[in-house]
Image (cartoon, rainbow, N blue to C red; front, side, top):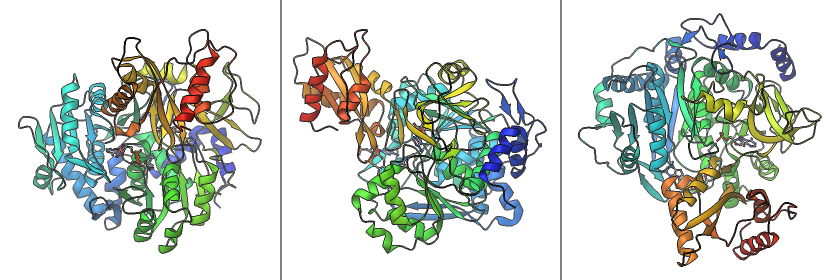
Length: 632
Ligand code: COA
Ligand code: AMP
């Protein structure tokens, strides 16, 4: 008989190794693991240290070898170009082999880093899997980032090669990737050897003779070639994914091969309840962790069919786009961010478009990436008539820390809570001094070490930064930097970040990084960036600028320039549209900027004048400016 969540969680607590030894049986290893965890290796220990295997083999080859080559592996649906395509596992194998051959021809070897700056097209997935096949370490950079962000990633990873396309397509414009890449390479100290450029029909890129290679032609020439899957150590890195930290310098989260395969394969069955051959759709972007784990790796490890959707929830062409895809491909489980549902609801408040489609294949909607506000959750439940499951995780963990295991015995939903810790995660809520707080009390959510398989072993080339940022504040624990509480029933509630990270349309951004850019404007003396509540995006950044005393220009000119600067330096994804000049910033007597109080004022929450404030009049001024500009 199938075990319940409570039984599995208890069994894991009693014997971590037995749980993961059992889960590891789902993987086809070249060398089976005999040791499950070694606490003396790495920063806090390493999973499956003596096993060898290959992620691409498990995602592709093994399904073909098992006679499932005709099953659909990948469905590409692109309302922004009007193109659709379907690749069986056998076709996927052929495409990945060709891509791997192209990489090898350019001298890419095991351990080399390859930057993928790609829109949501099948070649992006072929390239990720091809890197996995030969043991190269991919680092996907989201298309909405600016050239300097791309340059920072090229430098930090010292990438040997970049794979890109001529353009991405946003509903309102064609985004030329190549000029951004050229600018990034000019800015970067490290220069990649080659750039493979896929020419898309919507916009041709100009290729540089000595550096750029036409990827389409190279793939055509490599059709039919095969490249063996490298027998990698389970602890070898599969990818680096850069994510916002508390400074302008992004953190390179490392994912290993073995633990990642074991954890993701487990989640497909236990958490999402999806079987091989069923269609699973994560409506995210491969530039984010959700895209890595649930557009690419997990569904393919599971032998399911994944959907790659190059479009938006609204406007491509309307708020029925998601329902069209669910009907057309018989999607069983849909995973997206709450912001997508807020956008759909705004366009179609009654959910009228849902009724135009047959959604009978859909068993559940999973939400993550930001807090799922109960109002949106209830709306989604009402219009879809299936369980709507919030789950909480981070780029660092790669899979859900807290969720509701639909594949086991789904627990009753409490709106506002992503439900319970997954096996592998021993959660504690600590006060700032590191003491456990009673049930129901807000505190820092920390995970007792070791982190489970699939979570980051460290940051790329930065063990010490990892220790300082994540492990030092609460010794023996990983600090999630999320605050929340656990109720008497063991349900976890995630309330806010404890650092400067904000969540804009499910995208994780650092206000500190935006402050660095604002402060770089020659007329700005000091600044503060906060996240203010936004009805669609959850949060939107707002920058408060104090101009230097000798500046005589119109403040609105500087505001517009600063908005442009953040777009140029961080990218459109920052959605930084509000820059506001103020005479002074509110500070404590010791000089700390009162960002929390400013945020409460902007969000029209109750706020109290802080006892430590230097000059109370400043906050009153800011409240007046925000009211006049109708912010909040
Ligand atoms: N390449 C280039 N630019 C991009 C981009 C990409 N891949 N993705 C987004 N951008 C740009 C957008 O065009 C927009 O630019 P603009 O200021 O010129 O309009 C800007 O970045 C902000 O994009 P976005 O945050 O997506 O806002 P939006 O208003 O275009 O769309 C939603 C809002 C809610 C529809 C959209 O954010 C969405 O679909 N979210 C789904 C959630 C999701 O994918 N989350 C990921 C984690 S699960
Ligand atoms: P990212 O690394 O981009 O996945 O962002 C991770 C952060 O997003 C988390 O640390 C949380 O702050 C937030 N987050 C993600 N999922 C949820 C959720 N289900 N509920 C609340 N916050 C979430």
